[in-house]
Image 1: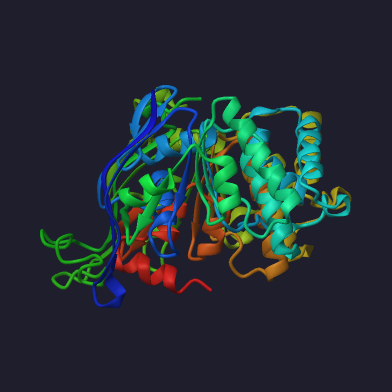
Image 2: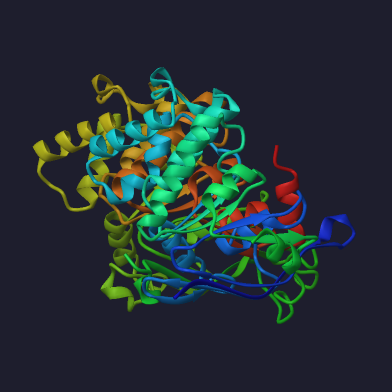
Length: 238
Length: 282
């Protein structure tokens, strides 16, 4: 079964305040993703990887085309679904993990990690224990657990970001550069954690520049070039 | 927890407020396309027009726009502080959403307001009675919602003040002796005293010091997590909108120019005015 089918997706940014300047970010994107598959999204910066991911998550509105997501309660076109339906899916099935942690101010590291888990695990202390275990695996120093992540280093924020995205075991995970700015050992932990999600049925779309991560983690690659999927590169890499 | 379209909590259609006498062309000659709220024919002012949206249980909806965009007018009509000129609103817990609450009698409106809604104003003087103690203010709301047992009322006021981090030993002091941030906390306690399914917040942090503002926002977010109240947050401040809301309506010159998921409005705004607003974000 396909978890996701992207058909003729295009995205044009129309910048009204810059003399109607138009930026074509994605052109006629077509691909399908099987349930439980991990796809690596590759390409130079500016090739449209993050735009594609944000269109799927509905942070960006598609200009044309459809993004059919096979939700537990039926197929939903993420490009055109009602906002409320998207909010519901974000709470129950789809998680997006951006490259940088957008911190919630004045919330401790452990509680930032727990946010999605609190929705399904009503026992808050139990949820915090799960989060602490994960932060321990990721090697975040214990003295930081109760601190506010806004002051953390890039690598520390990245660990929290990844932990937060995977802790509630989403059905579909969109993850942007999960291993950038991590040391080799932590990188392996992150790869193992994501592979473990896959074993439990999670489908993952993962942006990465890191050959090691791609080799160990993904089932196949999609290569973007100037907003288009470059099939030649896909064949070559596979 | 799957979303169902007819699960809405509040449904608003074509809500309109016009001051003065409109002509047949008033609506056609005002709005963002003309960059004015004022009718060139009759000088009537279109505070807001054709406002339609659905709010779902537990949802936090932001209304953002510059002053004069009509955002406060919308919530003031829904809370019956202002008479509507036109439009309808239905509230699910009231007769299963079958009655337009804006057409109800004043007595029924008071009932709806006291039992099913809460409001926090920018100015605590609008939401609190400065002649009563802070505990007395909460008691007033509880009594109006039909809770008559004095012991229960005092206990509930104590809990609410504690929950909103107002020093409970000051429960018998008048709000006039409190700091601005603390007055706002008392106002929030009063607004949620009757456990309403719906809370309106009208520029509640505007005019507070940054650190006080932050603590009030934390409190609102925490109450939302804890109680799951649906909220309509009116603010000119996109950081407040970003921190609190799931979905956002952008207003200009009395009209909705755009609505969408809050992250979409902030990262991929469609309308020229929303793009200007987002590009002005510090």
